[in-house]
Amino acid sequence: MRKSHKIDLFGYKASVYEEMRGKLASLMGGLLPDGAMTIPVSAACGDNVVERSPHTGWYGGPTLFECMEGLKMSDSLSGGPLRLPVQGLYKNGDGGQVIVAGRVESGTLQAGQAIQFAVSGETGNVKKVLSAWGDGRAAKVGDNIGIVCDWQLNSVDRGDVCCAREAVAIPKSEVEAHTILLEPVSGPVIAECATAWTECEIIRHADTEIGEVGEVMLRFKTPMVVERGRSSLSRLALKQRGKIIGVAVVTT
Image (cartoon, rainbow, N blue to C red; front, side, top):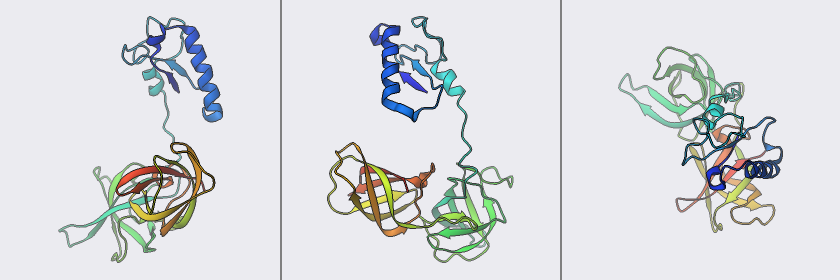
């Protein structure tokens, strides 16, 4: 889905719409699937946003709202391996049990499941899943939950990633990534991925202009769980002195 915005500034001309649609198709190449719509809209005037515009009788496609209503959510993350970055550990007053809090980024999690934490390597079974719904169903992608393990946690901490024991993520010391830097880099850089962070070195494969996509290697001071895919574990924020100076998407 693409939208050709501010169509009112061009007098709602079909010729301008067709020209812009052609330029967008050329610019984006094969990034969009077959049948992707280009919708002429004016947010300021409400044209083709929720209701069809009387000014674009030459356009026979859906409105922006209709197109969004027809979008289907992909379940590819639900079918992937369990990945739950640890946000924190908390003790409650009920016998002092430790609750591991986090958000399910891929896969599912339920009581009785065998798990292992990366980077710490601790392993065992899930004793209980704590959630707002409280009906015992498996936690799925997007759920914020707490889990109680059947062993005493020793080294699990924020930044670890809870995985299914049969598909444990491998912490990496370096990765290839597509990166956009927003300003020149000078000195150490902090890489943040999900709830983990570490100092890293940016090794460029070629000179890249600020604001352009470049291919780099990120070399971490401390191994982190980062992996190629569609979850948050494939995306990193690069910071200096607390300020975001770039972003990266893992490619290997």
